[in-house]
Image (cartoon, rainbow, N blue to C red; front, top):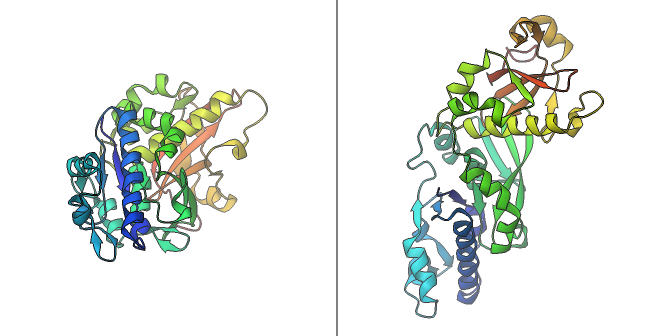
Length: 317
C-alpha cells in the first residue's frame, strides 16, 4: 500500500544559497522518498501546500529548471517526474473538512513549530503520515519533530510527529511504516477485531456505534486507533501495582470533582459485566475536541466506555 507523505513547507522557506546546495537538498529528499518506497514496496504520494513543481530551490533556480538541468543525475530527475504529487493537502481526501480548515488556517486548531505556523507538519499529524523536509537547516535533520497544538476550545498540547529529511531517518521508522502499511483498517474493523487488536482492553456496548462510525478518511480514525494502541500497550505491561498514568505514552487525567458532581451521569456506562461504572479517566485526541474515557480495573484490564466529542464539564458545557 502506498503511503502519503507530507512536505514541510517551512523547510523551503529560506532558499539555498547556491545551486550546488539546492541539488544536494533534492538528492537527500529523493533518497528519503526512495527509502520509504523500499519499505512499503510501493510509490509514495507527496502532498504539499502548493504545487511542488513550482518550488524555488534558490532565488533564481526553480524545481522546473532543476528538472531540465543536465548536471543533475538523470535518474533523480526521472524519479521526480514520476513522483505522484497532490496539492493542496486536502486533494482527494474524503471527509477532508478538518484538513481543509487547517491548510487555510480557519479551523479551531493550529499547529506551530518553534513559534511558526506549521501547516504541513500539522497536516502530517492530522493524517498520521510521515512529514519530509529538505535539509535546509539543522533543525530538520532529525527523525521526529515536536509541535505545539493550539486550540480555541482546548488547553495547548505538545505532540510529536514522525519526520525524515535523510534516508537514514527512515531506519528509525521501519516498525511505524510496517504498522501503517498493514494497518489500513476502519472503525468497523477495530470493533470487529477488538479482541485480537486489543486483548487487554474491554469495550462497553456504548462504544460500538462510536467506533463503527469512523470510516477510512475520517480525520479521527487514526488518532482513535493510536490512542487505543497506547492504552493496550500500557495494559499488556501492567503486571503489578495500581494504575499509573505516568507510564502511559499519552497524557491521561481524571475529571475534576466539580465536573463529577455535575456530570457524573454523562460518564456512567454499562460495562461487559453489566455493572455501571463512572469513567472519569480520559485521554485527549486532536485535532477535534475528542476524548476516550476509560476505567482501569483492579484486574489490570482497561475498560473503554466512551469515544467521541468532549463531554460537558464544570468548565465547558
